[in-house]
Image (cartoon, rainbow, N blue to C red):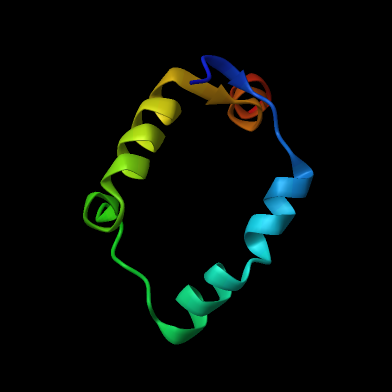
Length: 67
């Protein structure tokens, strides 16, 4: 588990935007409403909840400093 500042990865950001899973979800309407991750994949939802509360994005730090 990561604590502290997350390091951005342009390669992963681009891969996530161009994945076939995202294409299917968005174009075929197979999306589940926000907050329903507990139903689809509880283990991943728990991990993501803890990860997002214990680490901070570099972009949010920049936004707080200059915004």
